[in-house]
Amino acid sequence: MSSNTPSNPANKAPKNNAAAAPEAAGEHKVSNFLRQIIENDLDKGTYASRHWAGTPGDAAHHAAGPLDPAKIRTRFPPEPNGYLHVGHAKSICLNFGLARDYGGVCHMRFDDTNPEKEDTEYVNSILDAVQWLGFNWEANGQSHLFQASDYFDFMYRAAEYLIEAGHAYVDEQTAEQMRAARGDFGKPGVDSPFRSRTPEQNLARFREMRDGAHEDGSMVLRAKIDMASPNINLRDPAIYRIRRATHHNTGDKWCIYPMYTFAHPIEDALEQITHSICTLEFEDQRPFYDWLMDRLCEGGLLAHPAPHQYEFARLNLTYVITSKRKLAQLVYDHKVSGWDDPRMPTIVGLRRRGYTPESIQLFAERIGVTKSDSWIDYSTLEGCLREDLENKAHRGMAVLDPVKLVLTNWAEAFGADDTTEDCTQPALPHSAIAEGQTPPPDRVFKIGKEVWIEREDFEEVPPKGYKRLFPGNVVRLKGGYVIECTGCARDADGTVTEVHAKVIPGTKSGTPGADSVKAKAAITWVSVASGVSAEVRLYDRLFSDPNPDAGGKDFIEALNPNSLKVVTAYVEPSLAAAQPDQKFQFERFGYFVADRVDHVAGSKPVFNRVTGLKDSWAK
Image 1 (cartoon, one colour):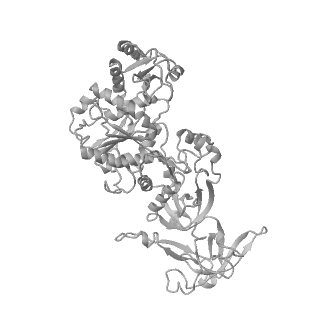
Image 2 (spheres, helix red, strand yellow):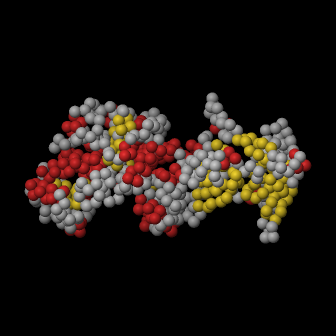
Image 3 (tube, rainbow, N blue to C red):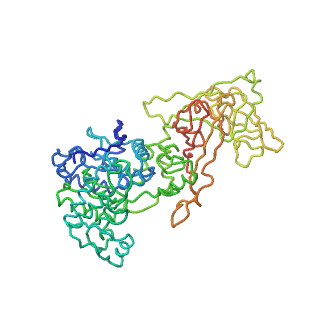
């Protein structure tokens, strides 16, 4: 096998470098038992004798190559049958991050052995997600982007070897018969009546399967191990099945396809993976993984030392479901707008919501890696995002529930009703600017006779402790003047249509007289003259139940009816000039992002709420 570079047109590796390591190896404070395993292997030189021929291949192929320049090799091996979610993001950060931190290489591999559910749409979305998270598959001048279907020839060769060595046989029982004969945890399995066939008979039958002589589902190739094994996964597992389906990469070349448990170890070995990291549900499959590696290494097909599988607990995040089937139901039943709906836990959804690669990397690092299942509260993810955006997101003022404030003495104070004045505020607070860093230009916005304020910032009869606008109270328009509230106007239904106040000249922020009048509070506002109307989407958690599908619950019933509210708001000019995907902190409200799909610079802005300034779900 000289080369197995995927034929997918997206095979070109990105030029961007993998994300910088957050900490040097060995300095991590969070729990990650995999680091201990890797460091122990490096100390012992477990994989120091490996060779790497530059492309995946069998034992002879790699023996002809030089010593492997990578100290370890990991892989991220998704099946291209859907969009990746936050759980996959943890795996991406883990596999690429470990390779980065220990002088290794992480392979980007598509486990495309199931032709019925796979599509190039998913291939491209997965590649985009990995790159967006800050990683790539190029190292030592080579691209390490592979796909399992390029190994089908070798997998078939390995299957024939197992048959010839007496380690596999063709079984013609029905699926129901095989299931009944397998036994259970309290009862050993029963040998198939076809188990005693000779290698020659099995080989002939297997080649008939390959050549399309038999119907789908009529027979399978099984490994011959131990039908009495206490591990049911070792009771002669199926390793090949007949399935007539067009494959997105190999077309109609094959009508038999390897089972995942057979294909995955072989893929690892051909790629010289050292540490094959997967989630705990594959722990019971590890004995078969090792059995297969031993048999194929014994036969000289695969190189020593073989890869080793390690399992970690998958991500369980509150208020989230990660089942691809259930996520697809949300999309196809129009409970959400699509795979990239900002409420979805998909990577494309998180990205559109406004999450940053850095915040997700920080989250993956912070939660650690363990062998025990546990639940991570969604607020941990939101906290990582706030931490990342705090010193990045430019500030701006927006009014989400507007009512007009009229400064009734504006003409008297400044000469004419249409007079406006410039106000300035920093784009970032001083504390967010690192020493030696050039601060961004100040925001500039207008103040005039009429401004928009939040409806909740006025109470004609204020409750106890209320410090904002009510008749006779003095407050500051943030970045502007101090004003004194004089009253309001109402419509026939009693709804407040305008708030009235008087401006106090000489008190504009940043001027010598700014502190001459003491204000009890400062409120945000947007000028009627220069403010811009915007669509603001107030996203919240998609589910109101922290464990929406646990214990057989109907997750649809747990949908949060208030997960999306759309309002027409007014924003200051600096926000109106936003580019798609640009993040901001709307002062007092939280973090928002210009929608990467619907926001078009120069048109009506569209912003998504990313998260509030604090956890609003905390109890």
